[in-house]
Each structure stands twice: as C-alpha cells, then as structure tokens.
Length: 303
Image (cartoon, rainbow, N blue to C red; front, top):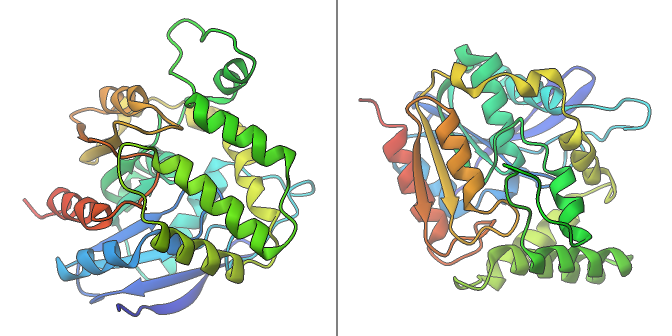
C-alpha cells in the first residue's frame, strides 16, 4: 500500500487537504477530481503506478469535500475559476512551478481553465471523461429529463438510465450513513455502465471512506451550482491551449457520451483522443486505474 504525506494548502480563506506521493525531485502530476468527489477518488492503484513510473503525484480534496474547508455558498458563491485557483494554491503549497495536470469530469474542465488562463503552470493536460469547459450541459439535461429533443448542434445529454437514477435518488433522500453509502454505491454502479465489470469492493471502500471523511454531507452539492455558472472566462477559446493535450474518454460514458470527448479534442490544437472501449464515468472497473496510469505516463514522458 502506498503512503503519502499530507499537508494543507491555503486558498484565500480556505484550507485544502492535499496528499503527496513519490520523490519530490520527479516531475509532478496534479490530479484534479470531479464534481463532489474527494481526492481519494483517484485510486491508490493509479497513484502507485504513476509513482512507479517516475512521477511525484499530488491529489487533494476540493473545497466543500473531505478534509478541506466548506463554504457558505449562499453568502460566498464560487465558480470554476475559483476552483482552478484552489488547484494553483495546491501547487504553490508544494512549491511546484508547473505540473502535468490530470483532471476527471469537472476536474477536466478545471484543467482546461488552467491550460487557457494559467498556461505557465501546465506542462501537459490530460482530460478524462469530460466536456469542453464552455459547454453548458444544464439545458440539455433538462430537455432530456422532460423528453424533449436536443437542440441543434447540442452535445448529447446523459444516458436515460442515469437520468432515471437521479430521479429515483432525489425522491428517496438518504439520511443515515448506511443509506448514504448504499445510494452512492448504486450511483457509481450506474456510472460504471453495463459494458465493463464493476469493482464493487473498490467502490464500497471509496464510498465508505468518503462518508467518514465528510463533515458536511450537503456541501459537495455546491459543485453542481458552481459548474452551471457559465462565466466569460469559461468561454475563452480552447484553441489558445499550447500544452500537449490528451483526451481520454470511455465509449460508454453515461454522463458525457463520447461526442463530448471528441468535441474537446477537436477544439484543442493537436490534441489526441484516446477512447477506452466499455469505460463509463469512473475508475471502478478491474484493471482500469492501472491502464489509465500507463496512458498518463506515456503522455507525460519527456520527449
């Protein structure tokens, strides 16, 4: 089992929990998780493979998750840019001038923001199971929920199975730890999809650990609110990205179907798209964490 060293980074008035693995002299990989997910959402197996491949690895809890501070969103609403500033604060805490940025889902949008607006901090970008940061998926979701056809040139909405799951979950809110764990486990099962095996043991370990590390179980929903705010900085053209970019996307992603990954790769100059057959929206499939790590190692290798 790989063991990291923990430290808190300061971003404005917030403390953010971080964990560092590997040799600080090795090239740095900053892992940025998705909506409502904690830093431990990056599997230890993936982290270990990256360290074995000669990278130091940093993962961290977003604001409103895990051991990081929570925010009164009503009084102090925040945006994707603020979450990107948190990522920069994490790099600053570890005295890293520039890193290989790896983001999943919302973390992929944060990575894009950094590659556009803080390009001096980004050596390479790996965007996993995400969509262009300027894509406002909210209207498409609502149209899909009400049975309406997508708008012209609109990226496809989430899969019907996932939308139905959200409806069921909203109708039966979890109140106890057991209910929260069961509900989260079922969500990850749906996100995994049916085309690849679901590692229930690994998913349960993550869900239980996440629940135990959480002080305010409602705070992580603020990420949804932040993600829906389509500010001008998110509309900056991705054609301005100069960092070597790799887009990793599963063929069975139920939140961002494959056209989202294709659109992102098309918008970033010289970006490469790597599709993974059967992969859904998560890392809870046997062998997948190490497979992703090997892809990242190749992308971040010195030419």
